[in-house]
Image (cartoon, rainbow, N blue to C red; front, side, top):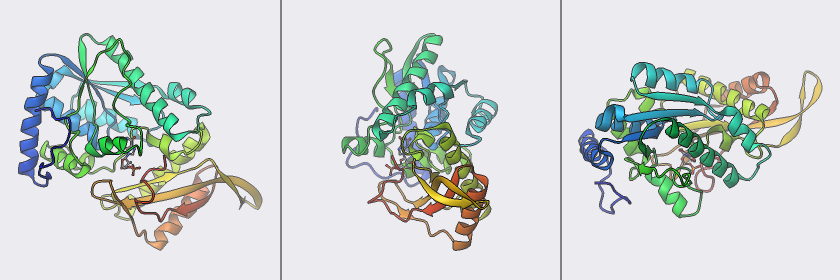
Length: 327
Ligand code: XMP
């Protein structure tokens, strides 16, 4: 059955048995919805779209084409990893599109958070539409929308990053098999589908990617500072054994400079904010108590290795009042 909303009496998926029952139900629902038609999936490589990919491969096999769009806002090494896992290991029909310039040109000078999200979302749809037009007979667009996305867009906290905005000439019907699930349930389902652990438990990453971690108008140099500092943070958390334990951690580089000193000279540069949070369902979150010596190491590496950064701050704010992401 294809649900519009999470049923009020739905039991939280906390066991493999409940996950398997959900999978059987959704495999059936997808088969009924799609028939022998082709489906295009926006495969970001995150948990949600990876689980959708695995579910759809189970349900409809090679009627599925996965499209991985590099919008230039991905983490260091990410496009390479998506190609390795899905194309080489899972034998998925994967189309890789490098649309970096296209996205960054459209975003140039745009500093309003919701406008940035809209541009990224709309451009995504456009790129998919172009790919769909190259393929014969695609009628469906699959998406890794989850329940908190729907709730928060209804509450007006954020514009919904997935739904809507399809070009009028393409009447894609949406396939959203995990849209009534909370994040922890998506992971249970991913486990039950046999996805590799490092994929199922990898930290979430928003659709607009590093774009929402580069508050203000995105520039290539500041975006690079976000990407490099994020890579250092991930490396150090991994070394410290925190990688599988902390739910989500990343860096943010706002469009704001402060005075500092580097090599005996005045350095008027950006600050890098570290965010590390724990949560069950992303509706609320607590900050991670990062060990002080690890903090010092991070400050040292980021200020010395990342061009343009002269300060590092730690965000102590739980959700509420701060959302996990900055935009
Ligand atoms: P917030 O910032 O609302 O984030 O506290 C809650 C969780 O959702 C992720 N997030 C997104 N995921 N597309 C996504 O796929 C998005 O646009 C998006 N915005 C936020 C965020 O990283 C956190 O895990």
